[in-house]
Length: 213
Image 1 (cartoon, rainbow, N blue to C red):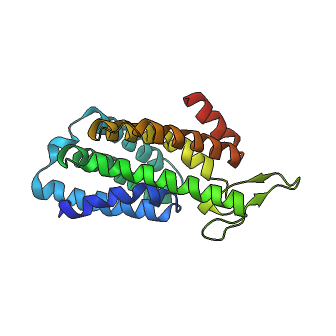
Image 2: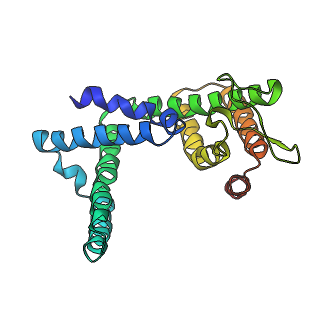
């Protein structure tokens, strides 16, 4: 069963760009099925690491706080955090046991970056992106690009926070596929990524990408 549903993580980068529903759905499906497979296939050794132990302590403290809270509805949220810990172990399991998983995930991240950058440039040049979302303006007529996020200023945040994963993806692909033009292609994408973040006018994102570089 895991040989099939593990492929959902390859859609996670593009799902993150669509809003909270799809990525959370992927996390819930994968963590639930992996939890079932954990008992079915006895995969408990993958949970025996410092990360998961620290996560369990964190989860315990969250639920302890909910226990002493007046509003017991908070248990609904704190207990559900377990899915993130299980999902992290699931991703680790996939990366260790499926040979091409790192490459596929790397391509997914790079594709998402390239798509968002091209879409943002189309929005800048033509005033609308491929989904016909308008280029946004402040009251003083200063413009900013948003790509598929429409009126929400999230494009810069997405690109700047996933930029480290983008670079890791490049390293993994370079180790797997030796091509003299790879450096040129990725240099162009990095320049366009930084330019796109500047065009979003999101100050925190500009700060983050500057610090990271």
